[in-house]
Length: 369
Ligand SMILES: Cc1cc2nc3c(=O)[nH]c(=O)nc-3n(C[C@H](O)[C@H](O)[C@H](O)COP(=O)(O)OP(=O)(O)OC[C@H]3O[C@@H](n4cnc5c(N)ncnc54)[C@H](O)[C@@H]3O)c2cc1C
Image (spheres, protein in one colour):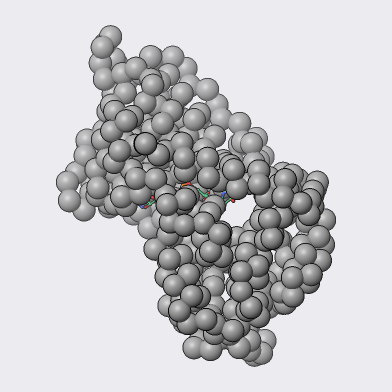
C-alpha cells in the first residue's frame, strides 16, 4: 500500500460485538485511521452475562452498552446496516442498505447457534443473542416450566443450569452427547462439575444424542425420550451467515486467518473473534470473549503498523483449545476457575465475584456516561 504522510486509511469493521467494539476502542487512539462500524444492532451485547440474565441475577442494562454514543466518543461512525457481501476487487462492503468503501477491512461478525439440522429446532430456546435470552427469561417467568432440559454441557450449559437451579424450583436436566460434562475441558473439571451438579439436584444425562425436539421434550437417537416443559439449546455454534457468502479461505466454514490475523492470502482484510479459525504454531484459538478481546487489541496495533508502513507483528494465541481458560459460575455466588488441567473449586464468593466483575467491566468499558 503506497501511502503519503497525512493519508487517512478508512477501516470498515463488520460487527460491533465484543471483538469489533474492542477493536474500535483500541484503534481510536491511532493516527491516520478513519473507523466505520457496520452493525445492525443498536447495542454492544455481552453474551457472557446471558446465563446470569436468564437466572434473574442481572438486568438488560448490565449486559449491553449503546453503540452510537460509544462510537461517537471514539470518533468512529456506526452505520446501522447489515453486511451481505464483500467486493474484494473494488474494496467495498456490500450492505443491505448502502455499500461502504474501505482501505482496510476487519471482519468480526461472530457466530450463531448451531442446531446441526435436528428436527424441531424452532421449539428450542437459545441464549446466544440478547433477543433470544429475553424470550427465554420471559417464558421462565410467565409459563413457569416445571422441567427444563438444557442441551449441551459446555460452560454455557452448566452456568445456565446452575443459575436457574439457584433461582427457582425447577427440575433441571443437562443432556450431553459425549460421556462427560465439559467435554472440551480437562477430566478433572468434568469430575468436579459432576459433583457440583449432583449437589444442586441437576440430573446429568451423558452419551445422549438429541435427535429431535418436540412439544413437551426431546427424543434421543437411541429411541428414549426426556419430558420437559422447556428445552434450552446451548450445544454449539457455527459461523455467522456472512462468512458463507465471502470468497475467502475457510476451515470448516470459519474464516481462516494467517498468523497476523489477516484473512489468509489477503493483505487488506483482517478476521477476528468467533467467526475466525485461528491456528498458529499448532495451537487453535478458543471462541471466547477473552480471545476476541486480545485479538482485537493486537489487530488495532497492526492496523496502525499498516498505516505507518512498518512490518506487522504475528499474533500469539492466549486461550487455546489445548490449554483453555474458563471461569464458570455455579450459582449461589460460587464459581470454578479452570486453566488447562488445573481446576480451582472455590465454594466461596471470590471467583464468582471476580468473574462477575470481569463480565460487568467489559460492558462498562463501552458505556458513555
Ligand atoms: C451464553 C454465552 C456465554 C458466554 N460466556 C463467556 C464467558 O463467560 N467468557 C468468555 O470469554 N466468553 C464467553 N462467551 C463467548 C463470547 O461471548 C464470544 O466469544 C465473543 O462475544 C465473541 O466476540 P465476537 O466479536 O467475535 O462476536 P459477537 O460478540 O457475537 O459480535 C458479533 C457482532 O457481529 C454482528 N453481525 C453479525 N453478522 C453481521 C453482518 N452481516 N453485518 C454486520 N454485523 C453483523 C452481530 O450482530 C454481533 O453484534 C459466551 C458466549 C455465549 C453465547
